[in-house]
Length: 113
Image 1: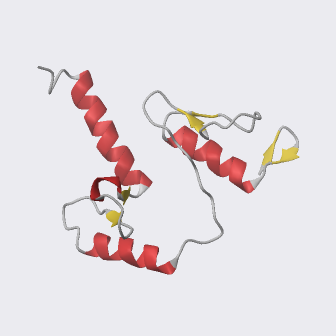
Image 2 (image 1 turned 180 degrees about the horizontal axis):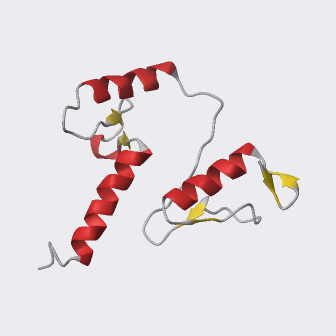
């Protein structure tokens, strides 16, 4: 994968791809502590790893198997964490589908008071 004659670092490529998929722009390292992707609605941090924990894959697999017509979701909660501060994990394609449908409804005037 080349970019302007240079080999693009894997994490940079990952950030750029995620930014594109979500309709944002990769900010890059500019010496400031900033989010990885500039987006009008979301504050996006992209974490690229060689592998994710097997228990996380297993949890998502279980949610997918049981989903039927629902969106699979994994909720991560740490002991003594406020429940409303728990983390929600969705597959990116499911997140995009939800947000794209929501945007279409707003654009069509559905759900406006």
